[in-house]
Length: 194
Image (tube, rainbow, N blue to C red; front, side):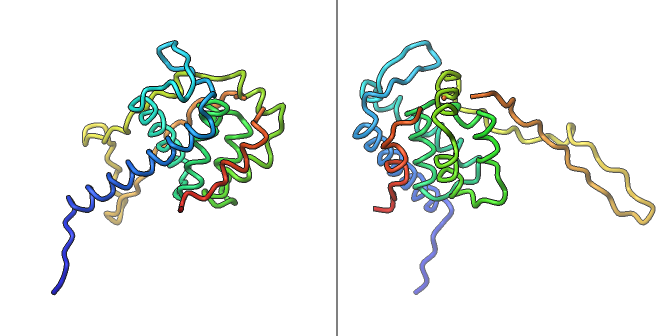
């Protein structure tokens, strides 16, 4: 007997796993960062523990999405990224030194947060905190699929082959970006596999 799992079933399982991961991060935030202030794009400011569960979940999902854009896959790396967003600043990744460390191709993506936590100084963290941007909690728009009309067709070469040039997308504006709780590094590096 052969078991076949349809794409729809896989999608449901992935969604369940994703929601469970969000709930684990939410529980950790409420346990260890409950009194941390969160400034929302609406101008409101409240502590992590005062956030309605659906709002907390949506902020966590924004953080997970950002971490994945830095190619992080391990739950512990992604969770660490989200914890720094809540504990320091949701736009910590835009600080010039954070950008260098999070985009370091010589370091495995899942090791970049560990490196970042070991390299940034108290002055760096203070700078990042001062540049707190509540709009960084807004979900980034999904990349639009390019229509055939907007894609330039390459000219065929003499031998009939085409040479396709990729257009580089502009990087987000790099802003100087916020002191890290002394216990934060140990908390961030908690292994979420348990």
